[in-house]
Structure formats: C-alpha cells, structure tokens
Amino acid sequence: MEQPAPIAQPSVRPGLRGRLTIPVLAFGGILMAVMQTVVVPLLPDLPRLTHSSAGAVSWTVTATLLAGAVLTPVLGRAGDMYGKRRVLTAALLLMTVGSVMCALSSDIAVLITARALQGAAASVVPLSISILRDELPPERRGSAVALMSSTVGIGAALGLPLAALVVQYYDWHTMFWLTSVLGAVGVSAVWWAVKESPVREPGRFDVAGTLGLAAGLVCLLLGVSQGGQWGWTGPRVVGLFAAAVVVLAVWWWQQLRTERPLVDLRLVSRPRVGLSHVAALLTGFAFYANSLVTAQLVQAPKATGYGLGLSIVETGLCLLPGGVTMLVFSPLSARISAARGPRVTLALGAAVIACGYAVRIADSRDLWMIILGATVVATGTTLAYSALPTLILRAVPAEQTASANGVNVLMRTIGQATSSAAVAAVLVHHTSPVGGLPVPTLHGYLLAFTVAGIVALVASATALTIPGDDGRRGARRAGSGTLDARDEALEGA
Image (cartoon, rainbow, N blue to C red):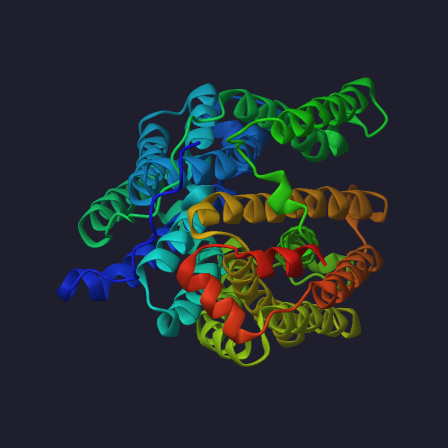
C-alpha cells in the first residue's frame, strides 16, 4: 500500500510572496462569494433580457448550487492527491471562464452552463484553508483560517450592492466583464504568491465514488431546491428523494469497501468529525435565513404596514454592516478558539445567531433594528464558521484536510439549500393580498426567524457534544498531521 507523502514543516514563501499568501487566498474567497451573489439583482429582469421564462432563469442559481455541492468534495480530494494550489487555480479559472461566458452571451442555456462552471469556485475556501494549514506555523494559523472562513460572508455582503449599482447604471453584461477581470487577477495572484503544498495523499482517484456522490447530491439538492415549485408531494420531487436515498446508500457501501475512497467515511464516523459536519449543516441553515428574509422584508412595499420599500441597492447596503462585522470579528474567533477550544467558539457563535434572531422577532419594523439584528446574526456566523475548519484541522490527518473541509462546506451548502426551501415554504403559507398580489405577512417573517433561531440553538447544543481536545494534543496533531494510537482511542471514545 502506498504511504502518504512525508509532512514538511510549515514554511511560507519568503519575501513579498510569503507576506501576500494570506491576502491573496482571502481575495479568492471573497471573489468566490461575490461571484455567487452578483446574479441576484438580475433575477427579476433576466426573463425579459434573455427572452426566457422565470423557471428557466431560476436555474442560473440552481446550477451554481448543484455544481458547487458536487465539486467541493471532489476538488478537495483532488487537491489532497494532486496539489492544492494546482486545483485551487483550476477552480478559480473555471469561475473566470464562466464569467466571460456570461459577459458574452444573453442565451439562457449558455448562462446556465456558465453558472454551473462558476460553481467550481465553492471549493476555494476549503482548499485555501488546507494550504494555510500546510504552510503557516501554528501561531499564525488560527487567525488566518478564521479570516478565510469569514470571506464567504464578506464577499456576499460586498457583492449584492456592487452588482445592484452596476446593473442600475450600466448594461448587465458589464457586471460580468468586471468579475472576469477580477477573476483573472485572482488566478494570476494565486499562481504567483501561493506556494504549492508538499503534503499529498497518493493513490488512484475514486471515479466510481465521484459519480455516485454526484448523482446522489443532484437528486437530493434538486428535490430540495425545486420542491416549492414542483410540489413537495409531486411525483418528480418524491422520485428525486427516493433516488437520492438509494444512490447515496449504495455510494456509502461502496466508499466503505474502497481502498482510497473519495470520502473517508471511517474518519467521518468519528464523533469529532461527524458532529462537526452536523453542526455545519445546522449553522448553514440558521445563517442563510438571515440574508434571505432580510432582503425580502426591507423590499416589501410600504402598503404591507411593515415593509420599507427599499431598492436592491439600499437592501445591499443594509447587509453591508454584517460583512464589515465578519471582517472585524474573525480575529476574535481565533483568540477564543486558542483559549477555550473551537467547539466553545462554535457553540458561542450559534448562540449569538439565535440572539440575533431574537432581536429580529422583537422588532422587524424599524430599519435600525433590522440592521442590528442582521449584524448580530453575521457576528455569530463569523464565530461559528471560523471555528468549523479549526475543528476539522485538529481532527483529521494533514493529507486529508482539503477533502475533509470540502465535506464540511458541502454540509453547509445542504443546510443553506434546506433553509431556502424552508423559508420559502413558510412565507408561501403566510401571505395576504397587497395591490392584488400575495405578499408574505409579518407573521410569516417572524415565524421564519423563529425556525432559524431554534435551529441555531440546536447547532449550539450539538457543538457542545463534540468531544474536546486540549490545546497540546490539537497542536501536536496539527503539526504532525498524523493520528497516533492514543488519539485513535480518544476519537473512538
């Protein structure tokens, strides 16, 4: 049996390139989040601009979600095997190619294909975190990983108002030309500043496992994302869910019997890894409801009695303080994790998210209270999302960090997709006519906040059940990248 490559001592590239490694990787993460967000202001007008139906236009979002969910664990595994910088560069390149395709075409089929290519960028954050583990000394690793985790929220908060401004004052293709240029800068910067990690896990790539996971996830997420439109009890959705159960069960059986599986399920079955993935799913659900509901609530017409009638640009600016907060609080997350452990940080972050929703329930009419509640949720998300990769880094061998973090990001994605479906279901069932059109009621929004807050509390409780580790054992594991016999016994306890 082939043995994993020897673990080199962490060392960043000297000089200017070494100093820019963290900023360049963070730029890639922000760019990924911006790219996923920029299409949102276009959605109401895309049917007219592309001469297509609203259902077809919705696939510009669904295609990115599905591609990202499938490719994140696959590219994470490829990074562990073939080189993390190489795969990271390829993911950013696919994202940039997709942006160029969007800039050049108004055909809806081309746009959907391009958005699917951009889904590859979902792997940027787990690959970057894995690079940071390999290249940074322990004393710098925590804050860098926390910053990298926060880029998702920072980019989303920046992308919405930026895209809205461009769409409002320029041709919509201009937005994609702008992101194409930024993508090209990101690809070049990563190739120039980031050192290729020497940590590899050699072996044959699990093609059968990749196809099985892809088929299972597509069935699952397609059913979740389209259930509201197709009907949750309709034959298509029920058939998709049944197919997902069968395919993923066969895939699980196949992974346990493969020498070099795509996802090491034995590692996932350890409480520290498995419970971290469950917490990621719940946190993703709780976090995503904030952006979804806030954007709809503040844009609701004033005739509803609670809506503020804000434009998409003003809506983006309402979410901007949350993005700034995520940037400011990411170092605090690293300090709490260093002092108390990442599971405490995760539990605290989820509890803060729940507090943010309590603020939203208390007052969702005044703009300043809406912004305050959304910012508190963003603060909790920073703490939680920054702690999750640290939990994974301390629990898995160094040669599996990209694939393990890829699975963790996948669980967040499933949580976000489920949150989107749940929020839509709640709001659809709580509407009242305004100007002849059904509009969600304030009670519906408050119910959505309540559901998200309860899920956040469950995430906090789940975090506290994750087996802890002392700083010494975590540091040793992070430095050596191996699991000794004592650690194995502790993991199984």
